[in-house]
Length: 71
Image 1 (cartoon, rainbow, N blue to C red):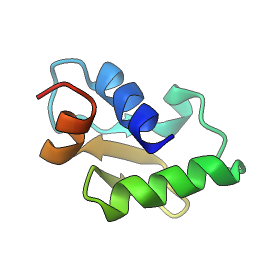
Image 2: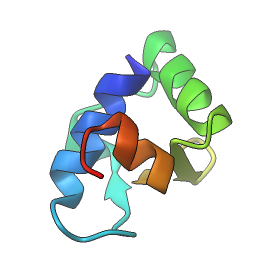
Image 3: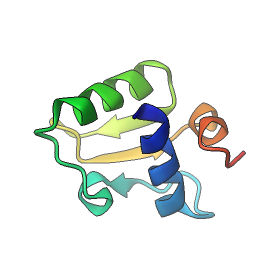
C-alpha cells in the first residue's frame, strides 16, 4: 500500500518535484487504517514527507521517487 501511495503521489506531482500533493486529491480516506499505516510506513522510511495533523499533504523524497519508479 505504501508503494502504491508513492506511485499515486508521483503521478500527481508529474514533473514538478517538491510539489505537495493534497491527500484529498488522491481520494484517500484518512479514516482507513490501512491508509494511515501506509503513510506512517512510507514516512518512516523517508519515502515521503507529510504535513498536517492529521495528514493533509505529502511530497515524495528522492527515495520515494525511486520507489515510485520516477527517478
